[in-house]
Length: 308
Image (spheres, rainbow, N blue to C red):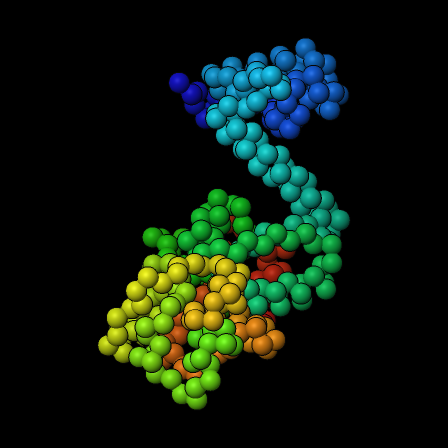
């Protein structure tokens, strides 16, 4: 039986977690001890203390050395996360002490990537030593990471959350959607199209219940058409682009700001059909009641200026 969280937290030390990482990387207590400049008996005792804390063995002895078991791989994975978080802590503290730099973790949905890129470009001219981590994902996943404190700021939609009131939001931005296809798609040569003309085509769509999927479903419903059968579902920009470039028969919906570069360079073509609906607006989101980091607030200021 696993001990309680309080017991684990009171017994584990950062140096023990570093030892677990070294053993996993080197496959030997002897080599891990050398890498950490401690004695082998000291490393053996530390591993025994860790396994005693968790009440289970974490490594199996094999012909090649020590190999983490299922529980060991789980513990090592979190040991790496904690070690990385401490490194980020030091980096951010150093930036604060020096009055510049620091670390910023920001998340964004696909449609907001161009705005984020512009905001970061403006911010980094003022804070050139700022270290930035960017996560592109769905709104639901980004809000989860924000709740965990893994992200400082996210650009997404809070409507997907069961508790949207738990967030502070700023600067709602509407997302114009366009229909795109491979330039070899025959529909790109038409001057005008109705949705019924392309309804039976093969489509790339966003997963169920995502805002862009709901917008497209509404377009089909209002046109009195059935939604495409057997579409390819993905929320990945790169996957969508790759599929369109590989298959000239596919059609996809993309935010116009995201599609702009591919359209300008002739990689994709815009179909001559304007969607009647806008996708639900996205927002700059932070956790309610939680102070925003200095780099996070500086980014928010730049994003708000861009939206004006």
